Length: 382
Image (cartoon, rainbow, N blue to C red; front, side):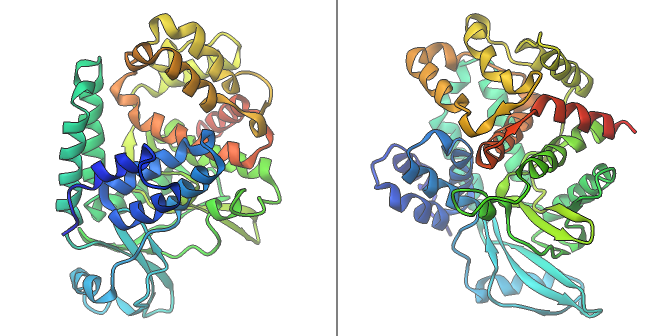
């Protein structure tokens, strides 16, 4: 069993009590809710010092896998004879499970995702600790509903049959974009998911500062926007975990492509027509936070300029300072920022937008985000 004090230790790490070089290693070992916390921090790490930014970025790609002897018995849940073989050394490990290469009897290569034994109890304990630590948030408008939504979303990730259904739904929603390739499921149980194996590096490994950057950054940016918002406009669903660690850069006969893996955090999006109208208003230069479901009250004038990337023309993401300005605003007016609620149904959108913004900053090129969203919406409607 994993210790239930992990969120407390993760919080101390985030406050700098432990040296920054130990943060990723410790959170990677803790897994469960604590590593989810670290991965969320990684999405906003662009505004941190370089050492911390690199440390949290590692959480997208690195975690310590469990020994094969611990996870192998879980594979007995699969239909007999499905797998010809499975490599005992995991090639990827994340907050809730690890992934092994496998092969079907017809020769197809597959990815075999196995949840860590005991991770369900550990995650529930983490979420209980989080609820207790975040008790003050319940007096803030929308705070309680947001915590309930977060809990439900994370607990859903403990059933890989739901993830298989999510993967199929996202694959259908992304059919208008042939350069986007979903790792479709082959078989699933509650704790095991066998999916198509996608070949290529993760976008996290290619983007600076970890890698050299892709050869066509603007084209990659367009694909990332479609990967995140294509399902929203076509099917009213959103993959909240479409961050650089779950996107695979591929190149083949069709040219540049992007593969998608990990669909545990797929959720319906409330009022897609309203969201589309809000985005259209920004593109026309008259957007409001209220139009996006954010009730900013007295902070409207200070928060609204931070959404200029949604407006007309290209935004220079290489010099984007949105996170830095938000941090400064929180320092100047902490109580006011804490009382800015948004519709609870927008929580998955906020989570996905953090991942998208993180990817665009690391791509570091001028990019017309508002116009890209309009193209995605048009393609979805065909």
